[in-house]
Image (cartoon, rainbow, N blue to C red; front, side, top):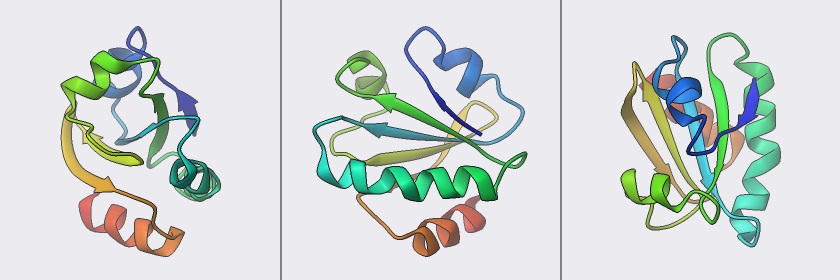
Length: 105
């Protein structure tokens, strides 16, 4: 599953979720972020039921970006049981990202 999260929905969608959530902190103007979008869509389909992909626009949700120390984007943070379990920064291929996710799930 893939969804958009905001400051209003973050706690419910990410922190209280029983399924691990990979939050993609991105911006519309970010080239590498645009390149990650189809990679994340594919992973959302492949991991359906095991992982939620949540997209968070840093320009519209600066307080979340600050809270989770997002200094560069794309910045993907894996949340398990409401806590950050892993952090992946920069563009990466689907295979590389899946390898990291599988190691951290």
